[in-house]
Length: 243
Ligand code: NDP
Image (tube, rainbow, N blue to C red; front, side):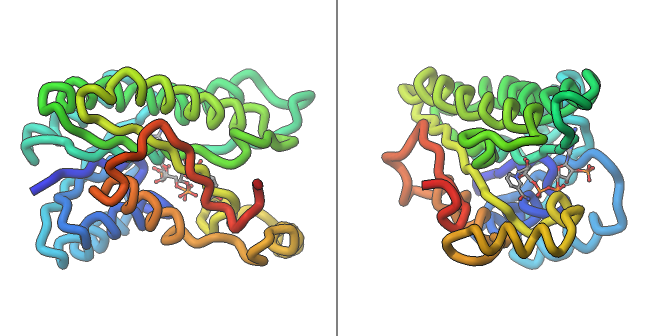
């Protein structure tokens, strides 16, 4: 049975990806940072699909944590066929007021975190001569967004990382793609005021914010055989925001 490791997979988009891939028959390893009451329910929900569910604790911004939880995944589930680098944070602020720490924390989690996990997983995929990596970027990594210099830089970095790695490992039958969501309803966007959300929705051609499942559907496609000739690509899931 194939194994998928999803970082930051206990809520939001990551949780939806974990559930979606469990229904596709993957054994699931979910990386999480903070303990939460939801872990037990999520484990039960995933195991309802008759697959294994392993939780691996670790902060993706720590290389040592990633080394440990990737090894634990392989030790307990035998391999890693699919990696979804989903863990991410925002610390929004205009550059004039942004603290160095706010910049560094976002880069360290989103971009360095993607490096840390991928670096530890890739040797297993190289040995197996197969693998599939999906990195969760953002449309603001392409368009930029006022108040998000840190976040946009991290997400643009993920796109460069994705394309470069795709070129490095294609000959080993490993595909690497990115998904760039627009505004998706999760706790990350819950902090926005209702008026702001309405204004955003008005300006989206499909006239609504996206759902975590909209992103999970594309990840499902990218890790399936149906996308076997696609690598190094960025797929926007944004209701037409960016065209
Ligand atoms: P949420 O805030 O709902 O979830 C983020 C997840 O990442 C949480 O499970 C969180 O765990 C985890 N996480 C954060 N920091 C770390 C860390 N250092 N180590 C391990 N796990 C960590 O966000 P979304 O589900 O909305 O976002 C998922 C991804 O999608 C992110 O990369 C985000 O940037 C991207 N995205 C989201 C958009 C949106 O509109 N929602 C738009 C574009 C991109 P914990 O609870 O322990 O902090």
